[in-house]
Each structure stands twice: as structure tokens, then as C-alpha cells.
Image (cartoon, rainbow, N blue to C red; front, side, top):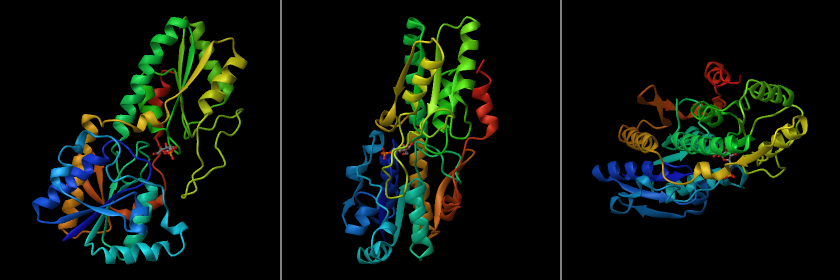
Length: 340
Ligand code: F6P
């Protein structure tokens, strides 16, 4: 049996740990693994290389992806879908494991509906994928963001400043909410729980009045704040997503204008996606990789590995096409309790 594997979309810590687990279990069962390089672009262009456990053994702690990635969308390319199907056959693959977020797995779901034996593994630091409690990469991003808040706190306190930290989160504020709770943020603004500039400054002033000498404001890149301009650039990727970034700076300027508070903005950007995965992400990635191989062994295709509670289970790949998993109000309420 020959199994293809690819990583697509934005990279994230834990991708290599999934690859290692897949290769280990495949080799133990006498299967070949073919790495498809650069996401769907590699399948379109038949850019591949064989993977073996001797190479994959030590990659579990390595950030990024040894296979490379891209945001190539075959549906936006002439005959892209047909080329993928033909190349799948030409490469003599018996199954393809796609590791990705909504875009990569959305296309994997499409290929599954065209009859190809597809398996998905849910990845994204944003944790906004439907069907799974958590995606790998998220825990690492939250740890990095929490560390950033801890560091901003000491300098904010020394200078009596208001610090605005912009975190990733295009459609959902999972990283902002979790890091906001873990780091004790004074205000958290997310795409699901929008606020106006006046509401934000009212909270900050109230905190100063009760004697707090500084503030930490966390904002997700995809949040919309009434009273601020649009921060999305006109540039879109192949899946139609506009490039985000800049809301933190805009919010800091608005706070400065409306209050006398000495305010600074920091954007953590791709630092959240780089480097080594946390122990928790290494374990989740490893479990996902091994489970994906179990699905291959059972020939239970058209499925993805998901986390429910503490169990890894199978879910239809089609689930990712139904929308986005947002932060529940009850969870945001934990962060909100401290906006006082
Ligand atoms: O991986 C998801 C994500 O981190 C989003 O939160 C962010 O908007 C996007 O990727 C940025 O991706 P890139 O700059 O790599 O295209």
C-alpha cells in the first residue's frame, strides 16, 4: 500500500509530529509513504519524495513542516481538480492523508466526494475548525501569546502604560480568549464579541480609577471595532481570505486619542505559528497521526481524526465545509469577568 501525505495552508507547530507518527505506523505495517511537497501545489505538479522513519524519527519537536506548504487552491486553477485526481492515480496512491485547516480539508472533502480515498487531520493555530474540540498548534500559540502578555505586563506596570496586544484569529477569537484568560488581560476583543472604542475606554478608565496603574488589552486580528476603520488589505489568497493585521495599532491610537493614557501596540504575528510545539501539541499531533493511519488500515475513508473530550474519534470530512467553530459565550464570559 502506498500512502500520500501533505500539509496545506498556514504552517503550525505539530505538523512534523503528525508526519512522524504516520510514517512510523505505516512502516510498521509494511506500507510506503510518499510526501507530497507544498500542499495541493505538490499534487498538481507531482512534486513528491519518499519518506521513511529514519528521516522522520526526530522531527516531532521541529516547528514548520518538512514537506513545505502553500495556500494553493486547485479549484482556482484550470483543470485543477481533474489534474489532482489524475496525479493521485499516476502516483499509484492507495490513500491520501491531508493535514490542514478549513481550506485544505475543505478541498480534501471535495476530493473525497469525487471518490478518492482521503483522510484528514485537523490543524490550525486558530482552533476554528468544526468537528473537533481542539486542533493541534493552538496550545503552542496560546502558550506563546500568554508569555507575551506576561512580558507586556511587567513593562506596562513600570511605565503605567496601556498595552494593546494583537493576536491571530481571523474568524474566531480562540487564541485571544484563551491567552487573555491565562494572561489575565483587562479587556479581550474578538470577532465573535465585538466592542466599541467607547466601551473599551470606559473599562480602561474604570480600572485606572480603582487604582490600577496599567492595562492589558488583547485584540484578535479579525475583530471589528465600531469607530475604527477597516484593517483588511485588498490582497486575498487563493481561498479568498483578505490579509489581516493592524487593528492593534489602530485601537492603540484610538485609546490615545480618547484618553490621556500612554498607550503602545504590539502585534505578535507569525511568532505565534513558529518554533517547537508544546508537549500537549506534540501528544495531540502524535495521536492524530496514529489515528489517521488506523482509518487508512480500516479503509474508513472520507473521515478526519478529531478530538472529543479526551478521545480521538472519526468525523466526516464534509463537516469542515459547514462553517467555522466560534468561541462559545460561556467561555468568553470567563475572560469578561475580569473587565472591571
Ligand atoms: O493559520 C491561520 C492564520 O494564522 C490566521 O490567523 C492568519 O490570518 C493567517 O494564518 C495568516 O497567514 P499568512 O500570513 O501565512 O498567509
